[in-house]
Structures are given as C-alpha cells and as structure tokens.
Image (tube, rainbow, N blue to C red; front, top):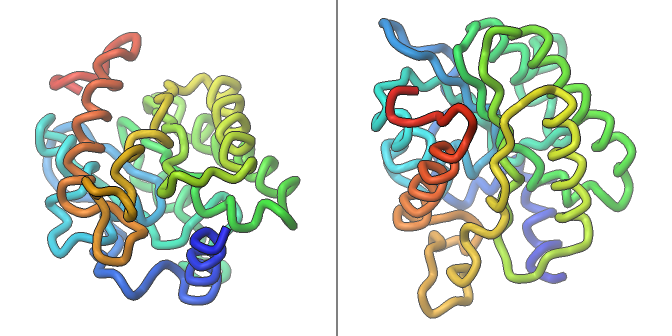
Length: 232
C-alpha cells in the first residue's frame, strides 16, 4: 500500500501530482465546425506526464476523427476529490461541459476517489450517480460515453473494483455507452515493469502509454452500438 498512499498524499496535498509535467486545462471550447467532444477526467485524460498535449489519448482520438476537443480535465480530480478546483461558486467541470453543449461527452473519472474511499464511500457513490444523471439530463442530445476508471499499479485495493461497479451501474441508469476494461489497459507496463509505459514519476503514462491507451480506446469505440468510429 505504500505506493498508493504516496500517490494519495500527492493528490490530496498538491492537487494533482505537480512534480510531473502536465498541460494546462482547457477552459474554452475550440471554435469552428465539426463534432464537439468534451472530456471530463483527471490527470490521465489531461495528459500529465507529457511535454506536449498532442500526445494524450483524448487528443489522438480527436485528431483521427476530426473532432473539436474540449478537455478541461484537472489533476487529482475525482467524483468528490478537488471539486472546488475552479473556486467556490464558479461551477465545476460538469457545469463547464454543459455550457459548451457538446455533441459527445467522455467521462473518465474515478481513479482518485480510491484515495477517499475509506472515509467517503457513500458520498463517492452518490456523486457518481449525481454527475452522470446531471450530464444526461442537461445534454439529452449528446452521446455520453463512460469509461471504466483507469488504474496505475499491479496492486489493486478492493475499492478499485467497487468504484468501477458504481460507475458502470450509474452509466447504465443514465443510458450511457460503457467502455469496459480500462483499468487493465496498462497491466504489465507499470513503473516496476521491464517494459514500462510510465513517465519518470512512475504514476502517469509516458508517450508510449498514452498512445497505447488511444489504440485501446479506438478498439472499444468501434465495438459500441452504434460504433463511435472514424466518422464520429
């Protein structure tokens, strides 16, 4: 548990692994025509660990499809963790996403909530349902794609699978598409692996890791009904 507790301390105290480079969150949607896709996530969707945000999985899949990417993801964000990142009364990430009226919304949350699980499990479960319900009701014409929460070590506390179940159930209730298996996409390639896909901090993917995540996401999007393929 030492690695997990170390990351938890960084998340709770430093608001998101500041020791590793990360792109600045986008707070305005890109202009122009084409499908607008919003990403509601934490450091694994922000692209922390990269020098260039063009290498993050969300940007790779958006560029492949000609999507306009709106990605205000925040380091250390969870369904309950760091929800006042934009300041009290300013609205949180779902508010920012709803205001842009996107055509597609990806939700890639839950990793950081593992570090609050022991003392805040009930609030986490409620927040998951509240967020997905709010996004679905406020954006009835948008396609909501909920991704199984990512994970970052071979060690998996019991909370990982519990939170995955809560997110999966809430996605079903919201009528969202569900991307399974994402917590295992980096298996065999964590920081202690001989073939590591992790950045120098040992906590986030490197360029290879994010590229692999993009490839896995491409595969899963093609399996949806209807597929979310190259045509969006």
